[in-house]
Image 1 (spheres, helix red, strand yellow):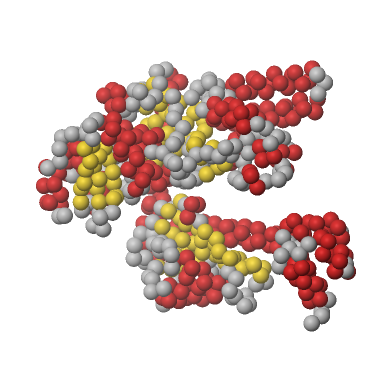
Image 2: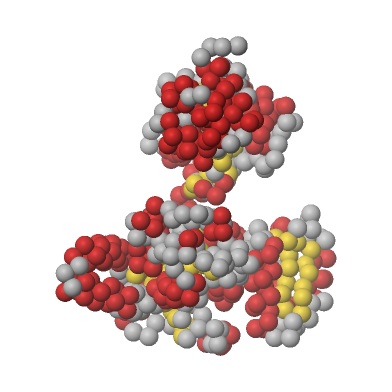
Length: 577
């Protein structure tokens, strides 16, 4: 449709509640919204006054080639349909859902004996989610605290296949449902308390722990009392550092909206669990609330404090929250101010990041603004355990969900150039190209990358930083670019390089340590962990196994084919043919 045809289409929309759907030239859904009166709401996107005020709305307007709609009986039903459709289709310009995937959640699984884990991926049909949180270190400490108090498992094993307790049971951090150390009823009682804790009811839990510690101390059970004291220490360390100036039983989300951004402060049990910020192109904060709270199974706060929602719109949500509305006292007014400060910080950061990537286009002579940058690094030790890492930067920030790592096993001898070719072919034969590909290396490495892209018949701009003078280099005839150390473009590229290097070295270290833990017996076909353990328990060492006779070995492995494999291996080790 042309813009004129779209305007004619809008005139045919009914003035009824419903959901509107914008599609691009490829008929792909790019934006979904709800409306009390469809025609009026959709018309507002195409008014010149709105287009001139909001770049994001203008972008949606230019990308839209088709408009569909679904009429429903009420605005409330439109709200839930919108949330479900956004969750299902994840449209490009409903940026909230994609942005929120950067943040970690605590997940309680749907198993008979549920586990608790940290995840960045939400599935509305699978498990229960608490969050999002902004600080993954905080979440890890929180998980440790939950383990010590409630002893809920953090593994994801099939418990029917587990034969004995793991180390966490002996550390008193798991109740070992895998071996029947706890009944299903007792386990679920602990889960109920854990849910209450995550919903902010923390003071009762602390009081119970304290009372139990004193009781054990009175009974002269000092070791057990000390364990609870240590748990209380972790509890206080976690909560004192994060506490804002609110009572310990205060639970609320504080939401503000300004200049196309939204900030959310999440407070549970007087503890600031998260300061979230989102770019939000819509004008109406009720659209945000619908997307954020009603798309997928998610923890709902009892209270929302916001000064950005009109009285009429508050009525839409009156049955979903105990209270939703403006600050009721000075404390809540201060929290609103803190949320606005977060918006100012976020706008400042994003404007700087956007300015930097725009500068990168000009300074480096790129064809387009590098909104997405993939960084590639190769790591090995004298040619062994060659690995490649790919890190992703989106609008100047690391996008860790996009990180990938690869083992390069096809090389006969150490060869960084071949490794670069291999990883690029593997990666981009299946994945979308970034706006800019960054290779940790000089011009020869970049030429290898270009060769791999040519093989795939793909085109992407490639740059690197030469190690000697930290000059920016290209795979073609362009000269080197030298930038001062304090230049934001150079700082961004160095951040990409360092992150790719860190990620590769970490994976390389993991593989090397794994190899060091391997036994020579791991090379024998048919020798798994159980047989290896029995052999080592019986003979004490690999040397003793080599000296054992066939009958002794057969008593342990109880399989003629495996016995033959062991004997062939012993023969090979001793230089026989």
